Image (tube, rainbow, N blue to C red; front, side, top):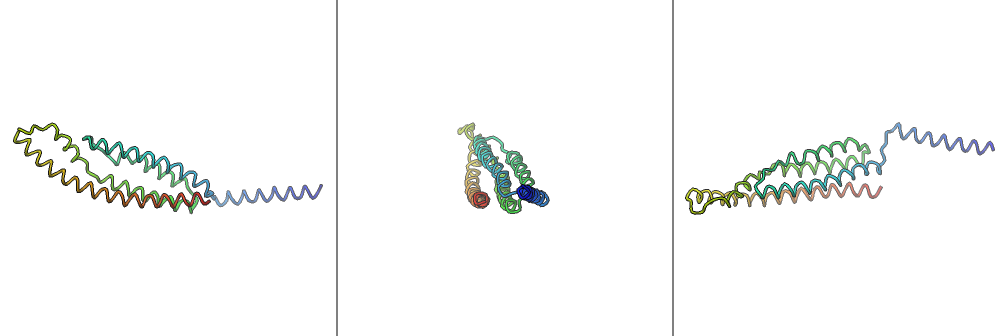
Length: 178
């Protein structure tokens, strides 16, 4: 009976010590950190895709688009998540993802879509009016410029998407192996 009490006491003491050490080190497990990071990343990617698609469709229809306003809540959610993830390994991978995401958003925030608004007005111009014809020529030049800008933007977005995907994969790999 005494040996059972001593063994039980030793097990309880060891468990208490382990808990005390874990709480002293403030260590967040990889699994817990990954759960926090992955939940936010899933929301961010889903929301980003929907908001970007909606904004671009609106811009093509002549609506004014403020990408900064669209992405600000997402950037804030990522920043909040970075504060919640204290596991160093996961935090490093998450920081890489956030850096790449902010770089991706930075490209979109610099896009000037006002030319699409002017092009949408093209359908309202009277081709028999000489002033309208001058405006049509001006808009055709802008259309050519916009096409070049769109190609450059597509290249930038593709590069940023690849970097963002790599950062996301790194975090996912870390979280699935632990």
